[in-house]
Every structure is written in structure tokens, then in C-alpha cells.
Image (cartoon, rainbow, N blue to C red):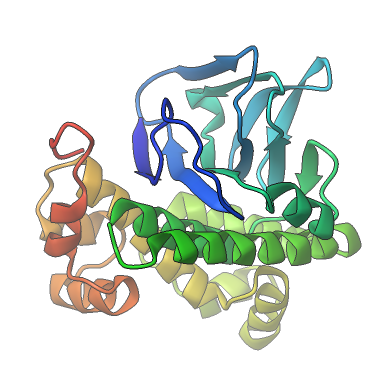
Amino acid sequence: MYMDAGYQVADDAPIPPGALTVLSAGHYRLLTATRFRTARMNGRPDFQLLYIAAGRARFWLEHRWVWVAAGQLVLYRPGEQQEYTYYLADRPEVYWVHFAGDEAAALLEAWGQTAPLTAVGTSPEYARLFGELICELQHDRLYAGEMSALLLRQLVVAFSRGRQGAETARRSPLVEQAVADFHAGYASPLCLSAYARERGVELCWFSRLFRRQMGMSPQQYLIQLRLSRAKELLCSTDCPVEEVARLVGYDNPLYFSRLFSRRVGMPPREYRKSCVDFSGILR
């Protein structure tokens, strides 16, 4: 399993008093294990939000098993039974955050989050905010507690907007197919004008539609997808950076390194050094 997680408070430690405290946050993706199961019959003493970014997962919610698909959010309250399973065949990608404090319930109430399952749609903004939150928890920086709480509030705002959008609009079949095609073929050269032409539409029209429904242009989406896969390869394999660049669709390693540095904030080799698991071994 690929896991990137940060902890401000260990799972077995008492929850500190405070207005709003982010205890931990992380990102899961199955790589080789056929399934990963979590069962907490008595729940936890904190709140937990799980966001399905891709694929699907099976959750026990309101006394029945349900499949939770990409773009949906699961909320567990303190003391609620938690039971869910990720299957490799379903290719789930999941982000999660545990939080507590005097303002935790009020935050959810202000958001209007009462149901255990909510559609918020898929958005790169969620992944970005989760990534910043995880990074904040992994580094003992000044005011880390305040910053992590602020990032959680930003996530709640983003989810609230996403829920509103999911309730009023759905992706067109053309955009849905494009997202699927990009995920399947990100490692190969892709000419967007040829892609649009093959589907009988003009590139400008396709780009506007894609941006309106996905929040970014097709080119930006491809770049983000490729860099996301590059991060996984840097953290989970010992492939040379040049090979990682090729595997995610960049024939020019120098261009890839410059693009990675500009978008991620550090060169690929430096990012790989930061990918150390809890045992101190490269993932």
C-alpha cells in the first residue's frame, strides 16, 4: 500500500483540549495487496472524514453495506462504528483526516454536514489541500497546530462548494470520457487538438467545457495527473529520475525536473529523499 500520512497526535494518545485540533491526515492507495480492511466496532473518540478521490470502496453505513464511489465523502462521528474495505480491483484512492476539539461539531453544523455520506464531486483542490495538510503535520513547524486547523477549515469550505456543484450539475459524457482517457493514457504523448478533432469538436470548445466542469484546462489536468503519478513512483520505487520522467509521459528529463520543481516546490531527487516511511525506509 502507498501511504502518505502525518500525525500531530498519536492514535493511542489522549486528545488534547482545544478549539479545533487536527490529529492526523493521510492518503492511501493500494498497490499490491488485494484488500485493506478497517474495523473499529466502538469507533474512535474523534471525528473522521474520508474522501474517495478515485475508484470506490465498501463502507458499513447506517446498518448496511454501501459502495462509495469517487467524489463522495464519508463522515464518522465520535463513538460511531467504523467498518470499511478497500479492494485492489476497485483501484481506490482515499484521503482522510481525524480531528477533534470544542469547535469540531460546530464546524460541521455550520457546514450543514449531517449525513454520513455526501457527494462533493472530484476536484484537484481537495488533493492539494489534503497534501498541504499532510505536509504540515509531518513537519514540526511553528504554529503547525493553527495552520493545520486552518487547512481543515479550507477543506470544509471546498467540500461545501463541491457539494453545491455536485447537486446542481453533472459532468458531460465527453468530459467523463476525457478524464478516463487521460488516466489510462497519461504515460503516452497526447495531442489535445487531435484528441478533440477525433471526437468531432473544436479544441477551444472542448477546453472551455473541460475547464468549466473540472476547474482547470485539459493540459493542466494532464500535468497534475502526471506529476501525481511521478510522486508515487519516486516514493515507492528506486527508478532513476530519468526513467520516472519517461514513465509519466516526459521524454525530456530536464524539462520534467524543471516542471516538477516549479509545481511541487522541490526537485524530484529532493522529493524522493522526503519520502521516508515510519521505519525510515524508502517507500
